[in-house]
Amino acid sequence: MDFYLHQYDSYETYKETQIFYNKKKLQNIWADKTTLTLVKDIVSKEVSNRSFSGICHGSRNGFEQNYLSEDDKFDVFGTDISPTAKQFERSIEWDFHDEKEEWKNKFDFIYSNSLDQGWNPRKALTTWLNQIHQDGVVIIEHTNAHGPQWAGEMDPFGVKPNVMPYVFADWFGHQISTSFESVQKDNKDLKAWLFILKKNVLVVT
Image 1 (cartoon, rainbow, N blue to C red):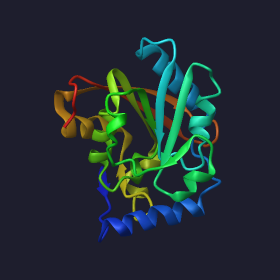
Image 2: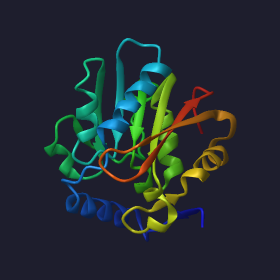
Image 3: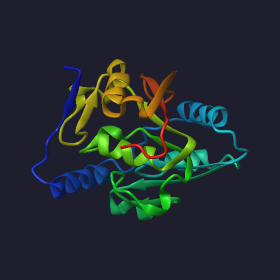
Image 4: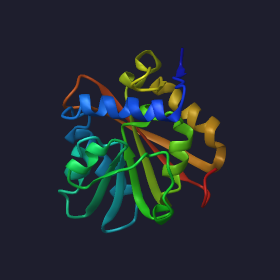
């Protein structure tokens, strides 16, 4: 099986499930400095700015945005569906599937290692693509641990890393361009693929 998407009986069940596991794993950190340093390098290379604004979606305890924001050139905040987001610096409570008018076409980059937590990953990614400006990038961190064999109630979306480009092509066609870089995570025995998405249209549908 290359792809799996868990089905919930309602949106409320999805939200309650995500908040439950967020609280259970609140002190766990998936992101790592080596991978995030590569994220910074990619953004610096792909976006022709001297400073960069971005969002880390699904950032739980805020490690991602706080590490990136240690670099003065980066101004980053994070989102999480759980109200625990209010406990952490640079975090806001927000469902990353939802659009926010003032975020449209605004940011230099979006980074997430949490697309697997989306009940509707295509909708989430469409929202993220429309949050970057025309020259911005969306960076999706993906590993074998994000695969279909690990998907279920907690992490509803699973796909093999080598299938991800085909999923993006199926969802968006020529509306986006996709490339990737890979790195060995420094906090887990896992290789991470960073899929770099750029949009070829002003509004992705």
